[in-house]
Length: 335
Image (cartoon, rainbow, N blue to C red; front, side):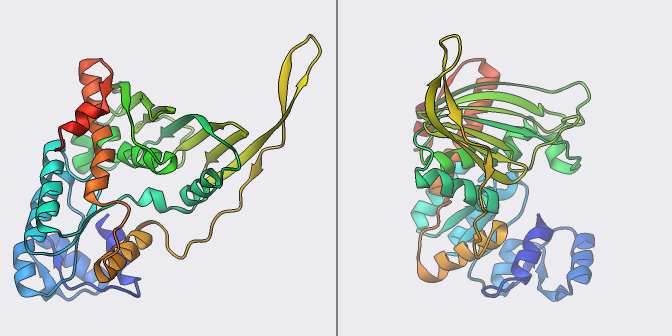
């Protein structure tokens, strides 16, 4: 992700780097050479960097357990933060970040880039158009087999903590509502290269039932990173498969032989993708720039994003207690 954000900023017409922080000298030297960076602008700590350069924002691309430290340092210095997801590695740490952002009045934004991919934006446009009517149910599938190495393979629930936060956040984004309750279980297949549970299944209540099934050690037939989505709607079905969006409108009911009634459907047809000016990290960087320079509130502030993170920790509680979890209980804990 460091490389992803290096490229995002280097390609931006709106921002430029003031400095860098890297605790590993070997990595610092390698990246300076790879990207042609000024080695004197790479510091060993954020405190040192903020003391020696003038910056308008901080992009936090550290592992989740370091997010509170980075966020607190920047917010206390009055510097807005654009943080990689998840907001923090614990709900307690996330609440501390939100409190600090509230106390200082300094912007803290979370990088939920999956919202801003072309297929997600296309799907959102179809939903918001009302063309397919009310949503009755949603199902999401996510199956991948990445070999990351490093901290992800040591996490107790790598799929849920590091990846499913994207899908939970997209549920909130697509439905325009928050989860009421959830119930789920997790497990780790015998062939898994993860220390923690890499597979899970959940049912979430958003006022609309949403099912989620996923694995980060799948043995084949992988989905796209955004996952595969199916929306059962009043007037037909909306699908997102392999980064493409499709619809199948439902037509009038008719009576078949044998006295059974069923609906006639149109063919499944692709939806023309939207053409936004920015997508993914480039969109987030532009939104962060706009928020810092023009005072506009971005969609994924820490105050909003903690609700997506609460779904993550609600899922973990359900896994460990084997009981349904009320999101009111999780959200009440954040005050």
